[in-house]
Image (cartoon, rainbow over all chains, first blue to last red; front, side):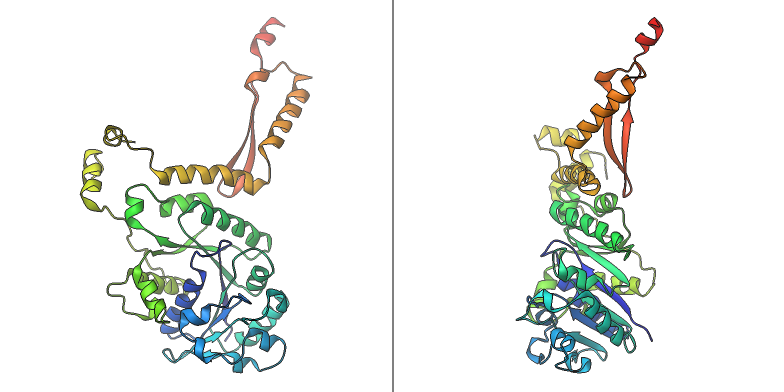
Length: 268
Length: 87
């Protein structure tokens, strides 16, 4: 067995990298894969709380790198899935405690026994980002349909290409179909047109993501009934596995005024 | 914009504005070429070509454009045909 290393990154902070990492790791594990989610955001760890495993941390990534524990001891088993693990970031150290070659070494040890290693990158383009992409076989760039996030995604695409880690794939998070319908949000097509890279998924804005994460539960582990985000994350996991899953229809004409407008404009 | 939007006095949809602004800013981000540098290049090109050919200097256009993720410098240099017919 030799695991595939997937790094989730974005440039801009707050676009949902950690949520995406937790959900892709969970969804891949639900498909019967052996998965480790790894938090590369040293000093600002959050993947543990998003996955609901914060109370079980004893050792972290920096302990492994500095030889204070064995790799296995830092792997927290998620009891809800048979083969899902978390390697948390250190909370009281900084990004300089880890080097890109450390990340490659740790991942090489994990590759033997895992199917996927999903790495949560910190925001920015500095050391933490370099650490996160160093061992990557596939990079997923998360963006939101807004000017600043797309601009940063474009910068990351360029950096990933320069590091010969491309081609990266794009995941559009927090799309609001009703805003796209009335022309007040960049559409999926607009974002792809601008960034010119392959799309691996679109996650709609969905309150169930926050409701699940309040409870330390990746939404992908919840029922897909009533949560389009849960289904969307599972679809992305299937695409990572090479299954050709059609994209969900996220077009929406909402409200009377919208329908009247499109009817009068002859669009319907 | 449809006549319906005009009738109700609505502005251009903000999504389209966002796309247009992104396309402009990314052209310069990707190439690391500032608008000022383009102007300097334009002046240099005019000087080199005008030393050999009669050109319509007023209508020379030098623009950065994109195709996919590739950037191109497009130059449009009209010849001064009146000068040629006089020759």
